Image (cartoon, rainbow, N blue to C red):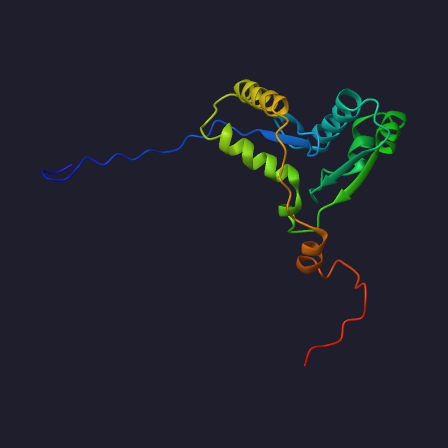
Length: 176
């Protein structure tokens, strides 16, 4: 600090760890389920899926999951975490679809995480237990409001944006 100069203060961010968030959303019903874990392992993913099947949707015949291409998001994770009979029972209730690589914008869970980030995670949260309480309160409030995602991405949009993934319905003549 010198005369006529403001005092400069340097702040160094001190990281106290990280947490992982798993999110599942049922967009038409306005429901979402989140889980805070210390790590992002196959076992953590398997536990989240087990809770989804056995706690949140125990009477569902089929649960349709749209997942990103993360290496832990596989049915094999269930077989690594649970006895084979239990893993098979869980897997048989799932219909899994993966978003295209680099297509996370297709993932409604990403939209939910964005809303969570703006409404709940807009500050530093120092402890995992505190994060779990905050996320649970946010989830309860959003579910009570039946907050839905206004999805505007149509099949026609997908055929344009993802044309390499869609078969051509009719022969297109080249434009000269």
